[in-house]
Image (tube, rainbow, N blue to C red; front, top):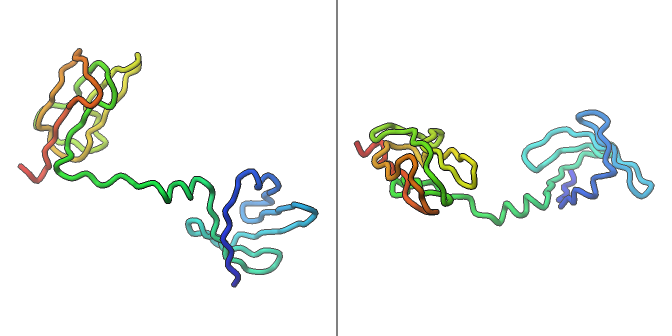
Length: 153
């Protein structure tokens, strides 16, 4: 099986026409290529191209960028603080000390630039300290809530 690696510019795909969910016809420069998708895993396609089986690894410019970007590290127990992402006014506190929270738990409403922003817990834990009250103005980076790890009970 032949293997190819393509770096695809989306502008070059304007000549591609999908016949059905598995068949692509690519006409360019007077040539017609019929691609039949056999299998896909991630950025690798197994195709039948004009009757020949080909393995193609494809990549868009955004994929090359994402390979260079570091993903955020997992939070440690020392990083259990929620800080203000921007200056604003605390409109609502939705949790109480001692309450168990997860990253999906909404904990505060911060008004900034006339928009209300719902802030979520930074990690899983127990609310240890609430450092703000409704109506309080905060600066960017101000401590809003501190958690303690659940296993630290």
